Image 1 (cartoon, rainbow, N blue to C red):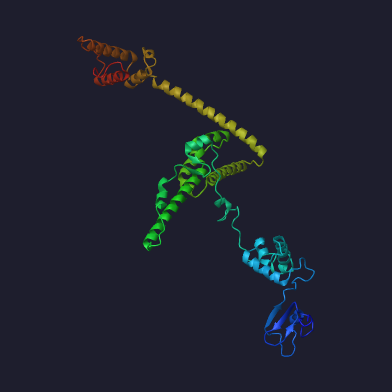
Image 2 (image 1 turned 135 degrees about the horizontal axis):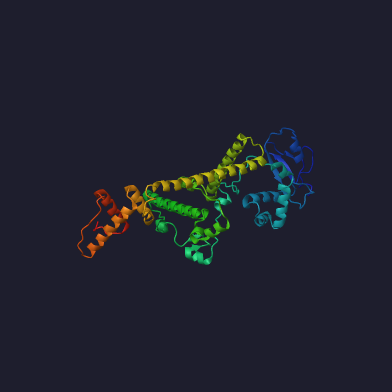
Amino acid sequence: MAELGKKYCVYCLAEVSSLRFRCTECADIELCPDCFSAGAEIGPHRRWHGYQLVDGGRFTLWGAEAEGGWSSREEQLLLDAIEQFGFGNWEDMAAHVGASRTPQEVMEHYVSMYIHGNLGKACIPDTIPNRVTDHTCPSGGPLSPSLTTPLPPLDISVAEQQQLGYMPLRDDYEIEYDQDAETLISGLSVNYDDDDVEIELKRAHVDMYVRKLKERQRRKNIARDYNLVPAFLGKDKKDKEKTPKRKITKEEKELRLKLRPLYQFMSCKEFEDFFENMHKERVLRAKIRELQRYRRNGITKMEESAEYEAARHKREKRKENKSIASSKRGKEDGKEGEFAAIENLPGFELLSDREKVLCSSLNLSPARYVTVKTIIIKDHLQKRQGIPSKSRLPSYLDKVLKKRILNFLTESGWISRDAS
């Protein structure tokens, strides 16, 4: 009876009870795997006929020497499980294959036979063509951690956090920019009976709220990038004292003001690097002009340039001393020439500098000026005391001289304006 249950290949008469290929067009044609793969033909059977795989479930795909002795039925269940549960869910896959296989056995068999085995080497190439570029890189891609990772909280003390209303764990402030922005969406709700107009209106509210959040975050980034919080707390002054910077010229300050609109397109570091590079360019241009000047003067070595600069400095120092001496001499000559007409007359030493200038401009001798001054002040005092007095000015004093002298004495505070 056991012999009657066996199946044999019709071509080579080998036993095919475990696995055979049955022709769907010819009756009683069953071939072994070797004859089927060789394309054996017998009687009306041809190799292009349709076939049906008859599996007893007892043969192994990897041969009798394969580790674990996995049958073809278990292999089929394993492939179904990997498709259904996905790679890595070994417990669910082991339950699908059967109770005879543990999750560890399932994992080891799949990895060794289907990934690292001959099948995996033939199907999985070493270099995958048309591989999708990974943009999650730290080089500034659209999904890089530099753009998606939250910034660390500000490094400030607890007292400073309370002063600013800053919440470090959320990187937020108690009072944000546009504090009432959340009111746009706080009352929104999605209803199934909303018409198209109401839906679009709610979308517009959400869009307005998203734009306000972006503006709020932009202001936070600017404050962090340009160190506005330490500047508000006074920490930047201490940092500036520790790290002295180069002195900014007036022209550079004006240029910074003109280029201020670029702040919104450049970070603080980029903006400072931009002006630092401009400063380096100016220094290099000045150095090039200096070297060209050396070359015009026949200097070809740096040692000679040091001697040249020392000699030039001495020449300029001598010129400067000569110009200072000549200017002093000119001032002294000018003063002497200004009072040359009256300095040798009596009473010159009694006059102040302003009175000397007045007498020189009026061509009036110092003695006569002192006489006129005494008479005018005496008459002014008698009028203030209520004593009638008649002015007896000298005959050489005309109306123009009298008016000039009265104005001078009034401006100098000798007499009051009502008396003049």
